[in-house]
Length: 237
Image (cartoon, rainbow, N blue to C red; front, side, top):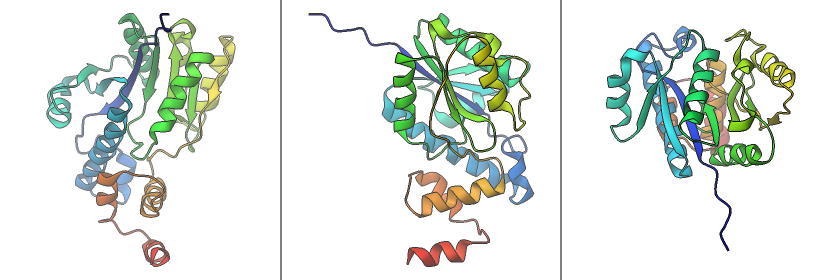
């Protein structure tokens, strides 16, 4: 008996070239540009280690488009790279999905890059939901989302139009667009991405308590003093 054909699955990792002053700029209110870039590199490298364990196809979608050499030199020549294309994040994501589906993938997700301790189980659950339902989305705690995925036959690029990108209503507006398209969205567990200094402190606490793993990021965070460092370290004794 012939078994069922497994769907072709692809992760689109959206990231920026690690240029000083162009990544995680809100963290520069408290940290030097050099330290912010070092942290961002660690975020991506820890997340890539998790993705590599999954066995799913991966495309690294980078911006700006003229920095392929920098990104390739950073993450290695044996990966697939694709420049992001579009005027805003919505257009860039829509283009990424359309391109991946055009290459024959059945299920595709876009994943943010500031999720160093995201568990592999979340990615696996997202693909499992796509197999039996419509779109899947991972809400972030700041009103946006850290992951969004579609099956080929339930994708429409209009979902990414008329969104106030970077604002607190990105998730709500996206869910409205999904509903307007006649689709029902499955939700993943909320996750805290890293944009502000408080996000960084929360990440440090998670990693120091050992509730998740991101060794490169933890090594960087252990060189940063937070107001509650004394309490965290004391409680670990």
